[in-house]
Image (tube, rainbow, N blue to C red; front, top):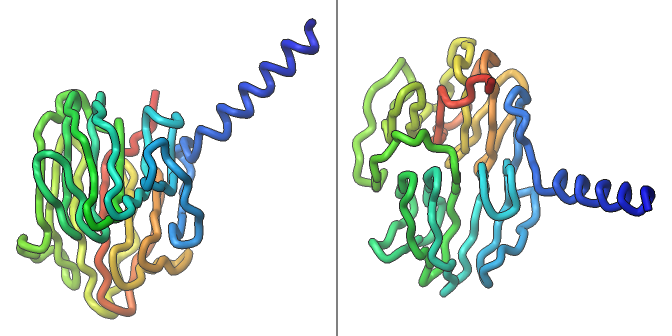
Length: 237
């Protein structure tokens, strides 16, 4: 009897470990999403590439999601918010249509029924909002102005709440940025060009997560645009 129970416990732990992914936020993570396979979701025609997750269908999740032409997902609640950046195609819900380059924040407690008529690919982050981060945001970055930042970099702010900042950065050809430390961590998704640092080269569709107090020296050899989030990876207590 004890042996049977132990076997069941081990099986449950193995299942749990397969569901959990990249949840040690003290570790640096680099994933070229073009090199990993799509995984089917419960909705037909909706595929995913999990990058970090705490549960199979709920909890903290970051993933690249593809809606095939005509695919839809059932209406669902966002208990702790949903953040989306449209990478390609047109993503839709009952509130509107969002083309490539649209940035969307659905606050805690919101719900919707997403779909795509022509197909799309999106970067999605679930259950990662502060409870008081309650503003819904929809920004078409194609219509926004780039603002000057430090020499060689332009910025397009998307969101700011407490220590968390989200923006697009445009790195000019040949730019070398000073070595710097990530207070509160940094998360990036490469949208165009090729981002580099002293550790490696990261092409389009690469996701990086640099932990609190990590350091690097960025550089680019061609114009490069990155989606960047900072200040949200403080050590958990």
